[in-house]
Length: 120
Image 1 (cartoon, rainbow, N blue to C red):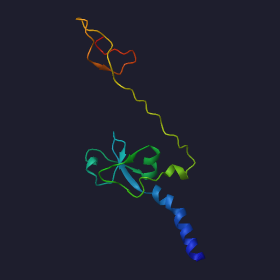
Image 2: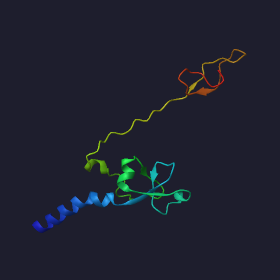
Image 3: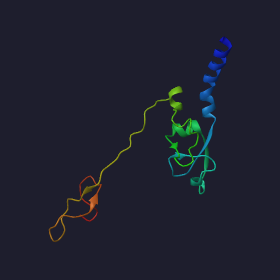
Image 4: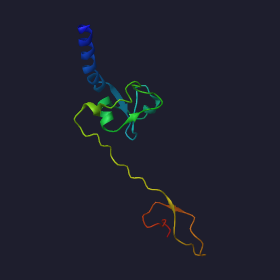
């Protein structure tokens, strides 16, 4: 029984090392990581480690499902790096507050901070 526990402990301790050695592929513009045979990689393909993909906030491709059993795991939980996620600024479009020459409200949408579209 002690021998079994020893092997179990060694297996658990080496598991994060095996994850970091996994190779995944990313594209120049995407934020997903893929298997080498995924059809989304036909135009560009860069090889990186699974750990680096997680550190760069890449997520698993929903088509090829690379490392499906590991995609929900976070390597960051075993490392000493900070686990804060970057803030993503989202702005909502609002209707332009400008008026047309006829005096009607503009129908255009804008994300501009002043509330006016490019025409006003």
